View 1 (tube, one colour):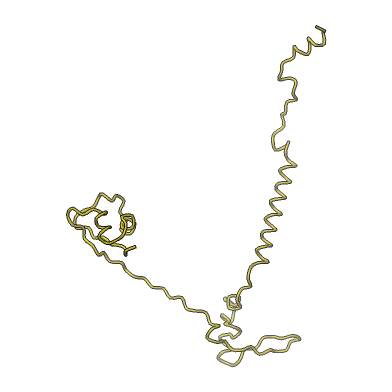
View 2: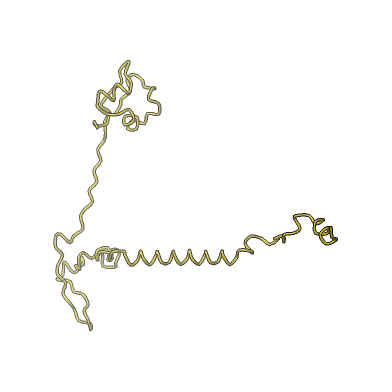
Length: 166
């Protein structure tokens, strides 16, 4: 064995590699910056795509909150009382606007609420399974509608709301 090979073998195995004492972020700073720029560009592109493909808002929606009040299809509230509405045209001239028709007006939102009353009183020996089959529904629907945690804990005289049949 030569002296050179003996000294090579006497070094521990861990010494052969260069030890990396720098933090991970410093070693990979360029990659992190490139990924950040890529994510920013993708976000910008997605935002532009959303703006391009978004439908134009209706004129009535644009005029909400103006000083004169909402404008419905080119006729303001004040102009409807005075006369036909006009819009500024090219070179400062006035262009008349057609009055609003019944189809141009926004529809009214109508809400209705119905109070559900209990329609069954638990008798002795009743189970939710029996009640469900009698009314052509499921135990789960009866439980959900009546906020019953345990289907086995029924008390005689309890009023239940039975959902409509399936």
